[in-house]
Image (cartoon, rainbow, N blue to C red; front, side):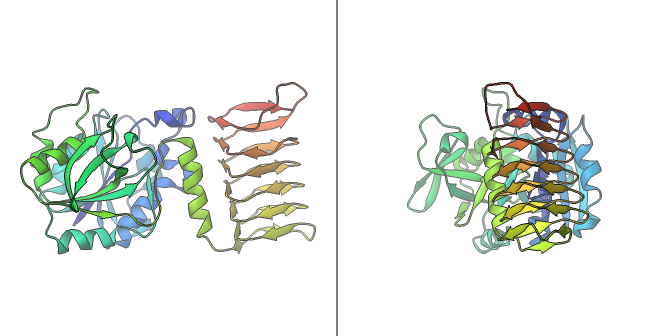
Length: 354
């Protein structure tokens, strides 16, 4: 069995962060999001992975490499334009051949890995095995209609969802999926929709089965989804302190502090993670916060936020909360109004706050 992972798309709902960074490389708990997908696949014993990338950008290939770090072999498959998930499958046929495969959307976060879904696929002799998750906003997703424990139809982003389930971004197929993706037509938005491919399989009588995700799953399409995924990952980490913590600081809960980092006269309340070569001085770092490498936080408070590399937060008189800061962002004290404390900032932004 092989695996196919997406890493393209424009991440429009995460702009301006994604103007300068592939969204699949945004760190969750200080680890690029795409790492979690690769680790889940490798954890299921699959060693041959194709990653579909934006043909105009090699950031993913540069960041991920050959796959040796993960114990797998990675083949990169360029996609000229983002023409839909069924198109991703279609252009990957030469890599996948006619082997069964796991199709994993690289911006999805899932606890517990994928092996249990593969086992169900094999046990049930399915042509297609889907993962479903109950969500508050099914209209954002492909939505199945269920009847007597069976999927009878699937609709992409419906205005009137027929269930409160979303088809999550982990699918398992045999070679029948290539028949489907080669027969469907583009949707009104010009894409080959994977939901249409699934509906084709249903219409032709192929065996589509499903598993419900009972743990947590996140499609990190929006800023708050990233923060929530970060929270969920941090809750499962173990304390590891490799930097320096002075006697005037207080560390409580599950806290990770990277090498070269100095914590001075500060309170860190976990779960949180601080990367390498950071300085946290006279500050408060609250739960569910990730601060990446080479950052300075001084006389400031941060909670439930993701801070990327080379950021500087200094003398900020209000607590930063629910914030997502790109690389090399500076937030420093100022005298002007109005006051605010919510940010989503792209790389090299500069902000003054009161």
